Amino acid sequence: MSYDVKSMKAEEFINDEEIMDCLDYAKKNKDNMPLIREILEKAKKAKGISHREAAVLLECDIPEVNEEINKLAMEIKEKFYGKRIVMFAPLYLSNYCVNGCTYCPYHYKNKHIVRKKLTQDEIRQEVIALQDMGHKRLALEAGEDPVNNPIEYILESIDTIYSIKHKNGAIRRVNVNIAATTVENYKKLKDAGIGTYILFQETYNKKAYEELHPTGPKHDYAYHTEAMDRAMQGGIDDVGIGVLFGLEMYRYELVGILMHAEHLEAVHGVGPHTISVPRVCPADDIDTEDFSNAVPDEIFEKIVAIIRIAVPYTGMIISTRESQKTREKVLHLGISQISGGSRTSVGGYVEPVRDDSSAQFDVSDTRTLDEVVNWLIDLGYIPSFCTACYRAGRTGDRFMSLLKSGQIVNCCQPNALMTLKEYLEDYASPDTKAKGEALIAKEILKVPNENVRKKAMEYLNEINDGKRDFRF
Image 1 (tube, helix red, strand yellow):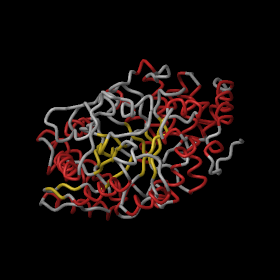
Image 2 (cartoon, rainbow, N blue to C red):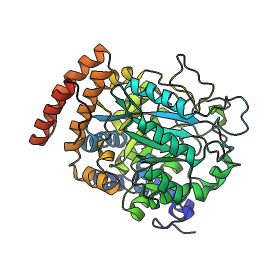
Image 3 (tube, one colour):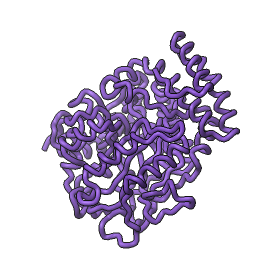
Image 4 (tube, one colour):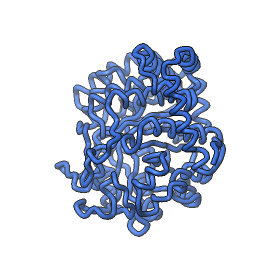
């Protein structure tokens, strides 16, 4: 099979021969300064670079070039996202799973893990606990099990989540991370009002993929890899892709994920809304020593920077798998969304003591949401709980056109500040509130459009008086 970015066949738009040729090309040109300079000059236009060009930058180990890559990534991130960092939390509904994935403790042969599935009443309790922290955006997670976790259960759970209003709390956007499914089921998810449909590829190397998924429906590489096309055919505008770095050689994965982004852009006219960059980490029944492709911090940081350069418009997500130190580093290089106060166990938010017996992976950053918000403010970032674009219909190509034109700042900046103000009024500790108020007073003046800025200031005063949910 030959490489074809517009093909609907997985092995053609993620073509092994093309990836291997790219990696060979990168090795041969890793010191080719005229070519590297040409790539960097192209990258400065903030319109992206190709998977082949990205491979060259990744392979290059010239210190000055790496410094320039980091600097450029920071500039591009600032151009598109400013200082805004979107906050979210995962909500694990069920860890029942029929797959045999060798890197995940949910695999059906694991007899150690406590199997749990939340009832709708338990979901209500979890959501209230999340609302009481201050969260407005969730990512639903569930193992693949057609008996225990059918699509009807997911749809009912989404309906339950959106129905809960507790004090000033409300979940305004539910993103969904469930197994690859049919166009018909994606239509149902769309009708249920989901935000982004998220699915990690795990690895783009077909041979490695099949070995890592020896049994279960997830074993089908093509069906899994082509899921985003079916999701978009089902009417879902925003999709989120990702790989689990450490399963296969990171060079291969970087090229693969960029090819996937290029494919979505070429076929559907809009690339991925988000790209996630998790790394293999310890979990029940899983030892990272079993995976020889673990990615060191320095390389991981460079991967984040290159993805930001290659796909300037995409949101980039990092989870609590990573330590505070690592998260702080990659925030500068391109990350625009992070989780806070996360629990990766089923029913973990209502537990007074952290119980990880049903967790999917160990959490490195165990701070509360308020501690994470406080930390972000100290770093000069604006923690954002905004869901306005999704609720105003600015999704898919409509969102991307606003982002690429730079006009999004007149929506995102005030919306971020107003949702932060809500958080400060309703949930923040006194220290976080004081710091946040000072940040808002400074950053509101940076909203470019004078009319928007003036109106946002009025809304901020109204939030202070008890009103909620303003947006541009």
